[in-house]
Every structure is written in C-alpha cells, then in structure tokens.
Image (cartoon, rainbow, N blue to C red; front, side, top):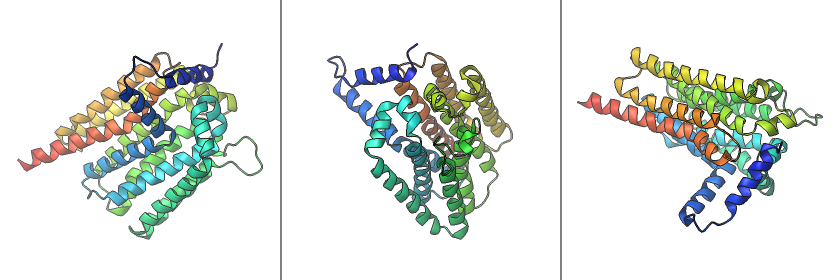
Length: 317
C-alpha cells in the first residue's frame, strides 16, 4: 500500500495549486496557518494564551514578562527537538522538513536566543526561578540531543516507549504551574489547573504523534502510537478524556472551581469532537487535524478566561 507520507505529500502539493473555486482570503489564511505550524509559532501562541489564562484563574497578577518567559521556553524546547529529529520529519511531512532544513541556521540561532532570553527574564524573578528554569532548559536539551557516538539520532530518554508525550506534558505542567508557584506562591487551585494543563498538553502531543505514526515507526521512534498501536492509543486518549471530565466535575463539586467554571465543559466537548475527527480516516487530512490539535490549548485558555471572568462578575454582585 502507498505510505501515508506519500499521500500527504501529494495532497499538500495539490493544495498549493491555485483553484478558481477558492477565495483568495482562504488560500492566504491557509498559508499563514501553515507557516505558524511549521515555525512552531502556533505552539508559542497557544502556550502564551494558556499560561496567561492559568495565571488569571489562579488569582495571580497577570504579568506579560512571565507569560513571555513560559512561551519562549516551550517554543525553544519544541524547536530544538524538531531540528534534531529531521529524519522522521522528512517522512512524516517533507514540506515542513524542507522548510526547517532551508532555515536551519535561523531556527538554531532563534532557539538559542529564546532559551537565553527566557533565562534572562527569569533572573528578574529571583535565583530560585532562574535555577528552576535552567533545570527545565537543560532537561529539554538532554531529552532532545542524542548521546555522542550514536547514529540513530535519539537520546536515551526518547528510546523509552511513550516517553515523548509524557515528557512534553510534564514540561508544559512545570512551565505553567511550577514556575508561577515559584514566582508568587502555591495556591490549592494550582493542583486542579495543573491537572488540566497536563491532560491538554498530553493529548495534544499524542494527537500529533498519530499523524506521524508511519514515519516515526519507520525510523524507530518509540512514540505512544508506535508502541501501543493506533487502536490502543485511542483507548488511552478516551481514558484521558474521561479523566478530564472527572477533573472538571470534581473541581466543581469540591468547590475548588466556582460555579462559572462549568464553562470548562466546553473543553471536554471540544476534546470529544477532536477525538471523533481523529478516529476517522487520517489520510489527506493532516492540516485539518493539526489545526484541531493545536487548538486544544487555545480553546482551554478561552474557556478558562470565560470561567474566571464569570466568577469575578458573580463575586462583585
């Protein structure tokens, strides 16, 4: 049978051909979105929106340098992993691999600069915050870089089955929950918000891994879909979706979340919709499915903003 990446490359080529039936604004919009995805800027924007919403929901002062620091770190951590992992990317998404190879020096310098800028911002929040972020930076680099002398381009951590999605989720949790707790103070609601961030980051990572299943398996990457197979991976995702629903319900019942936080059920509904779309045929739908996966942190952020905004309006009455 024809490999997925060959079919996706044909679909991508056809999409680039101008159609008399497609409005110019849609064609331009699709190209802008592709650039945001290929450059990891979409990830940075999603991380910024979610981290800002978490700060507001936790009752912390909204500080743009802190949001910038978190999004810069996550952008750099994901980008360095992509730059090291071009071998599988050439199979999964040849156009994206070509874009990164063409601009490799630029993205390498940009990654180093964003790491340094994030660390520089952390210094303004004190030594403990700087040391925590330095630990996260070093961990992300160690995760991505292979051991010297090996030719498989994988670090020891990447050879652990299913480690990639788990480490990504832990990275998002540490950046959005631990760092603000170090900057301000621990609040009990961070336990619930941390669970929300972890689940959303984990599911986003696994959804994107499903799109790269064939290429990852070909080069020997032990992602969750490669290790478990597609069907069992969907059971894991459904389990996480169920836990997400329980987390929102538990937060409301325990009153850790005030009643307006029922708006978070919008996130549960959106995740169900994304799951349903991914269970359909994946071939030729990579762009649409990637938009849905990258929308997870944005939808979660918007739901948190609506929930917290409603809570503050009610408390003022």
